[in-house]
Figure (cartoon, helix red, strand yellow):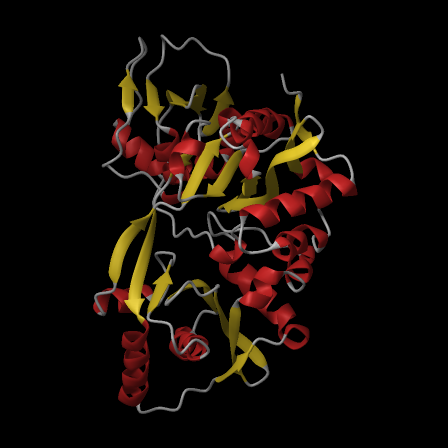
Length: 413
């Protein structure tokens, strides 16, 4: 019988073995995976997990820790990536064993949620990750360029912007400031530190993307990024602009696409308050649900406790009266008690007394980040106490209103 160890790497030698393993699994090559960790100033060995079979590093999963926002509070998220198993060790469930141990470790380390990007969903669904669809738009590149030219001619006014390629030494400080100003209260966006921006300058991912900036005089007022080209398609991973400079969007995106003349289709994910969104709808851009993102709730009670100030503020704003309401999700449950305009989050309670709402993990995360909608299928178990007022659907709409949220794919792992 084989001896299997599931644990973090313990040395640089083992980390090198991980790089070699990933090189055999993916066409991106060893240097891509190595750059992601070697150029991270915050990297720690305990975020690289392996299955060691009879002394051989046979399977691996990488944690990419980051902080994301829910309005003005933050949650700790464990990004999952670089998942691979040597061909001769596949079919033994090594990846699932790592995920099981990782889930325990994430809870101990204070992670609230976990996110991964996958096209093969059943593997991760076995361990509790669930698809949370994101709206994605697709538009033919030549149609966009035609619309951009038409818009410019129609206005008849020379826009006061100079569009340039991104130059790190000259532009990074202003770009970072624009990102922060645009996203400082945007749910789902990542908190980007100074170290984040400095590390990104060295990464392969950064160098393979295309960046453009729009300047008014010496000041950057907008910037955008296209990701790696995939055949004839490319994704707009980020497009931020300062208030009052919405007109810089079109020339910035046109400048980006001009760097990829053979691209046929542009894929876009935008927050609901983005100035480009009405134009995409006017141009009849294809709209579909992307199933790339999968989430897992690690700590339900702790998550709701962290966002308690946000929930409390929403309840006060709508003058909601006192209530008790339990929420259940993925085998975890918590009681919300709202009395005299103060919210308490309680982990231990008599479930028979209170109304309990049962959410699937995907619908709870969707509600947390995007807001409640009436199409959600939610289990309803009445308790012996009087149900909360206002009605349940209205209560959820108040607690979890629609959010202009976005996860910028620049940050994918």
